[in-house]
Amino acid sequence: MRNVLKLIALLTMVIDHVGAVLYPNIIVLRMIGRISFPIFAYLLALGYKSTHDAKKYLKRLLLFGLLSEIPYILAFNSDNLNIFFTLVLGLIIIMLYEKKEYLYIIIVFCFAAFLHVDYGIYGIFIILFMYVYVYHNKKLGVILFVLVTFIYSYFNILQIFAILSIPIIGLLENIPKDIDIKKYKYVFYVFYPFHLALLYLVKICFFTGIVLY
Image (cartoon, rainbow, N blue to C red; front, side, top):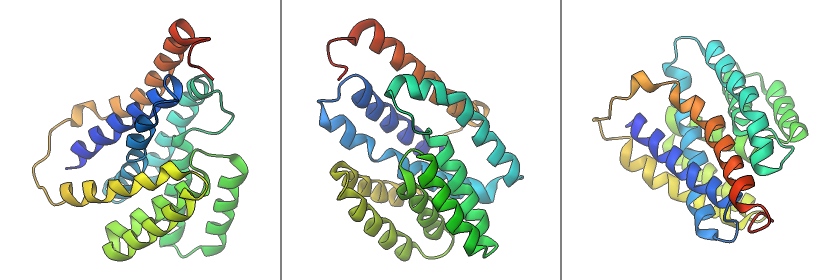
């Protein structure tokens, strides 16, 4: 189940980024892409409990965040921090939540807003609510996720399509059979900066002056 969801998240992410970088006028690509991040947030919540060393998991996310930042800036012409940093802060929030360090949670949320991570505070909330969904109360997790997504969609209407990730997760999480791609574990990390660099090269080689802005 987990690996199938990873592939779905990667595929919808690529569709989203192709739309954002190369075909910004094809809105349906961005609509499909809204499915990706909530699935990654769900997988992060699962990964937190299944990892042998949460701190090492955190360092790995931070490392690939640093490696991905230049391709991210080039591809999107953005000064935000890429999605790995959102996942890092979300994982820190989960760790603090388990320790009931609520003051530090507020500080991390403020830190996320100050750093301008991808998806901003909304992204951190989604990670926390996916943690609630996985380990505490599924209905509450869904309600909180839908509520914050509706609020965020006031600023970005396309984000409402992120709700479609819930039935996908619900359908697949109870299927015991999964595809075996454990030996390709780090491919998923490397793929992110690689595909951003590739999109940037395609943009400057074939799309400059045509559909860029």
